[in-house]
Image (cartoon, rainbow, N blue to C red; front, side):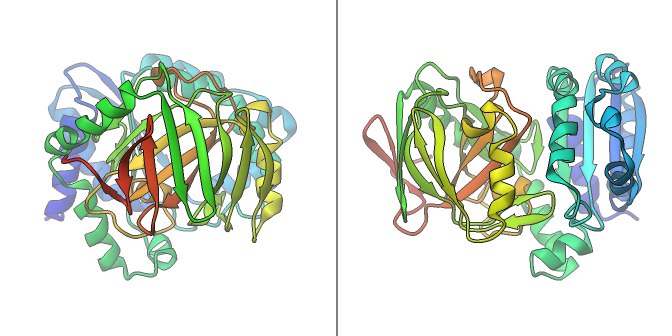
Length: 356
């Protein structure tokens, strides 16, 4: 008998997150250790009289690709991938890496070159219904300093919630951001401002990410001024970059530092012009996520935190920044952090000044 929490999560993904309908085509990509959840999703897709294109992913093949790929492979978008993207009505990806540091020693330039080539593919997928879900594994449990059982409890508590009710709680903040013009964030070694005038706020209510629980918006590209220090390590292909500090002028990073793996930060900022500008400002709102576990899909939703992303913006928010990266970095606001919208304090010490 499958874990009832897996059954519930499968139902949330098929019925709420992607709302699979009869005769739709669903690409179901999953890592080996997520096969139990993938199987239950597959059954539900078939019961909907929809079709599934299965894409199981086996550990080691990504490493083999980057270790052996020629430049022509890295720069080329596979035609079959684009055909699949244009054919599908929905994409579901279940990530469950057995070795989260698998690509740690791969040249960052190779990874970013591949990401750049896949931009048209990702743009096509984003036109469809899509969902990314992170599944608990021993590798992640070790990084999070938990037992696998503890991590499973953590994951299912953050995913198996009433997303319609959570969405209602996020609507007020969405309205405030959507009507807002100017943002100011102050915290330890942080005082940054930027504009969100004319941009559309988006509420993450379990439709694209699982877990979800954030409200986000794309800042005006040339508006960021000031400096910000990020509380938690930002992770790029398995390597942690610690104590990142960025200084902005007219929207662009003009100075940066990190106490560990600063070279990775430098490389990422040099990828393209868009990598030095902000693509996202987000506010974590998942009530069940209260600690950092070194998994971005969860960490960016920590209640009482904000995050900024360098790189690609969200066209659906009005974002115009284009880049081969979208790298989220998180600041904990629970220790004397303050968030202002149009000069009005809306969050202090990680708690909102208004009732949700």
